[in-house]
Structure formats: structure tokens, C-alpha cells
Image (cartoon, rainbow, N blue to C red; front, side, top):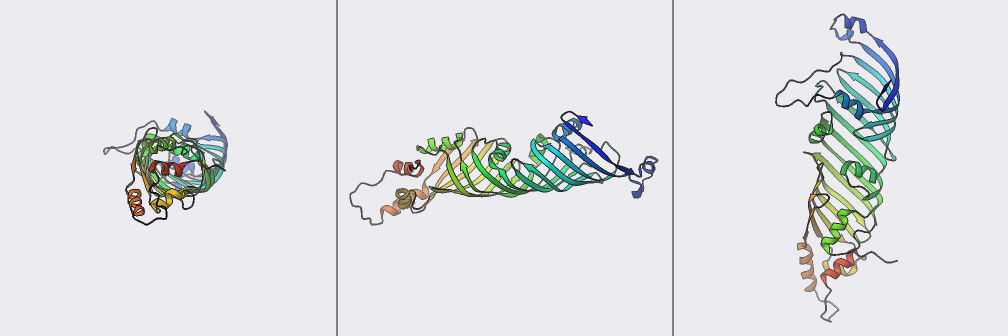
Length: 339
């Protein structure tokens, strides 16, 4: 068979079709099928787009029944390439069942963005105009740049191998329905990677009045737990470390490409010695809010100022009377190191 970009072949058997067609409603008379589906390409986005023209049900409207007879199916699906929600899975393999209009793939395995993923997906189409889905995914060695570009729209900003796990539920056919309804939680980590030049980092550097933040820099031990709710990805424990600082972030990122974050930066002992010795491990905090392309950036130096004063009240060996300049200290934190 062929349909647009998709193609494949189906083999299998069907039992109980005649009693069902004659109008028997006994459970045992529901048709039963066992099939194998093999596809060079299966583009579910394209196929779903053609079968989901009806709008979502809302405001007490009556749910729409499925447009095909009740049938019980067991089988195997194998696809060289499977596209769903613009995600290009390769070597997709999974047993599947269709019972009482609930389609389940479990356990499913596939390649995605250079790594491997496994998990389960269930799709309840009893309400045809507003189907309900649930998914659980674990992924290893995924290219972080591809993943972040697809889900956050931040291209060429972060590189490394991503480990990811999450559970999600939602409803609808297309993105306009799915994203507002999506609820989920999970964890993501990158053992070691690289932050590249990105407009957001450049803007933060400009706001601080320092150079070097827009330069590529390695990082390690990135760890983030997240929740998805009300069209936002909420993180309350995002942390990673660079050679010159420890970074943390709390806040949310909207599917509408808006930010609302507080970023904490703590100088690493021994790397930015003038600044770290002065503020005694206090944290410089940045507020990021508004569109990702041009967020408002605010600087909270309350903790830094307190540590600065405490340091001034501490006796020092240097009695020259000339203290360090705060602007110079910030530049010392972010200046690109010379080898």
C-alpha cells in the first residue's frame, strides 16, 4: 500500500468477521485479527492529518464515535522510518494491540537523534474527535542539540549526549490540541557537553557588561527534573558546572517560546579567585522573562552585595586602600581563559 510519503505491506488473518457482520453483539463475536506490518516509511503526522479533520470536542458537545467497526487486533509493527509529532524515529519495532478502541505499543524501541529510545504508547480513540494518549519514554545517548532544537527551539546552543526519561498524557490530534493538554514529568542529564555561542547567552553577557559569555565553553554534570503543565515546561532543579562557575536555574519555558527563569551563578573556588574570595561563594542571580529571542534580563546582586560588605569588614593583608572594581570582578568571572 502507498499513501503520500508512507508505504508498506500488511500480512495476517482475521477471524469472527462473518458473525460480527450478521449483527451478533456477543463479546466472543468481535472480529479478531493477527497482523504484521512492515514499512520503509510510516509518516503518522501525514496520515493523522488526513483522518482528523473534525475539531476537538468541548463545551459539553457529544463525543464522536470511531469511524470503523469494533475489532480486536494483535500484531507486530516494524518501520525503517516512523515520523510522529515531527520526531524521526528509525528502526522502530514494537508489538501492538487494539482492544476496545485502545491502541497500545509496548514495549517499543527505536533510534532517535543518534541515540536509542524505548517505552510504551497508548492511544484511546473511543472519542474520535479528541483521543487520549499516554506515553512513557526512556532514551540514551541522544544528541542534545537535536532534542533541544525540536522541543525548545534553541538551535545550536548545547551539545552533548542526553539521557532522558519521562511520562506524558494528553489529548487531541494535532499540536494545537495536544500542547495545551499535555501533562508530564521526567528527568534529563548530560554528563559532559559544550555550550555554544547563542543569542540568549550573548544578551546575558551584554547585560552584565562582560565579554566571553558568548564563547563556546565546556560544561559537565547537567541535571534537570521537569514538569509539563499549562503549556509550559517547569524546571525547579536545573544545574550544571563550567570551569569558572556553578549554574542553576528555576522557572518555566513556554511552548509559545517565552521564558520566566531565575538563573544563579556561583563562581568556582580557585578559578575566579578575586571574585570568589570577595563574595565568599554568594550567588549572582539573573532574571530572564519574556520572548526567548529578546528576553528582559534583570540582575539581582543582593547576596553578592551582602558578601561584598562582609568581606570589606574582614581584616585583610592588603592595606593599600585600593579595592577591586566590581566591573573588573565580573569580567574576571566570564573572561575566556588563556592557555
